[in-house]
Image (cartoon, rainbow over the protein chains, first blue to last red):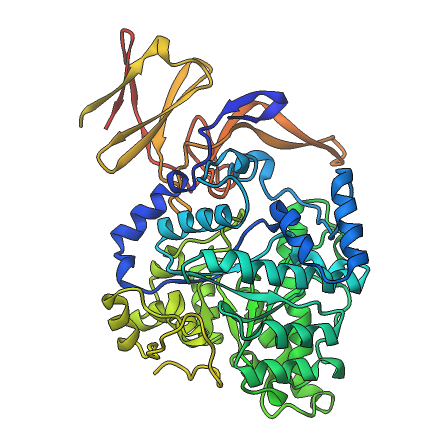
Length: 430
Length: 121
């Protein structure tokens, strides 16, 4: 297949085969004997927009379903918000433009999604992955809360009924919540919270207005906490936001956006004492990298000492509450190793950090980004690369060596179902 | 030091690339403006197949004398190749990362003996 290069020049590129593309990742996995280590990817994606014709029929409201089906047949318009961006960097990241060239035994639908997932998981040595959508990460920007609910509901049914059952238990998910509709969120948890493969729920944090502390959400948080389900905030960019419209390059909107939405919502979560109100609710901040964490810890601790009267629920410093929460690794800022080591120390990475690839997105990270870090202890490596997630989501080892390593580092719970949930969040590793 | 045969020169058109495998090692060989260049196919970033992605002219921003920007242009002389995993972009002639010259791929010498092309390994 040819890709368009400068001045319209065509450059032939071998058709996409994920296994072939990730051959070097497979070599890393063999060299490092990843088969002995349970590796959990806490943030991986598929392109659910390629299967909207299967998802839309799961919408409940007949009017919105008809609107969506009709919109699709016209071949124009979008039923969910679309973000601006140049993720493929003009074809430099070849798997974007070449995605359609990849051959699978089944050409479309859940079986293809799972087959593509297995290809990259097997190449990287990943045992389990938490599957998230891609386009629907922008669902929080939809002007109609009814559509936000309908699409979230339809996707939840489709992914739990059609996709995850094909994954041989190797994929799980945290379902997106229609956060503009608190009652709808609660209904989602009550309906899907017990389904196989549901490890928690996820808020798409790309939202211009979201009050995570609003009283309307307390029933939701209680419902999650009671069920031992995790609450994740998945970040993203929104170049169209007024905040970022002065950014004239994608790099600016992307680098700031992913950090910004986590900074914003994490701040509101912490200063409103959510950690005191729901101390057993595991909260995970996803896909913002790590550099924002020490910044926010320092900033909030500093101002908290000056203005504690504005945060009367807090019984310890904001950074202490942040250290009670979990974070995914990717995209891990690794340019300054000393700064990274300090970040790991500040966030208690050994017990609070979980590996994520973000594959197939453009800035994915391999497990070696964690495994090869020179300053990590063996315990920290095993915890971050999968042990902590194994405890949080009760994921079973896939062979005896993995089981022994989970036992060795205090991450084995001896459960029989994967992923299941627990009534309390995992204790810190020994 | 040894020589690894690549192909006949007439089989290797300008603008093309070949990947040769020697045991676990992989080397990307490019023919660009009549010259041959060879680099390790392992990206210094996360180990991706650095030489197998898009070949594309370097992007530059041109400024007027008063420092106002004229915008973005493709270079008339500098060619790059990008690792397909993340887009790490290397200079075709040096193998250096275009943003940080200290970051570079291992470079191999290319020999032409008659019509035969070899990489010195």
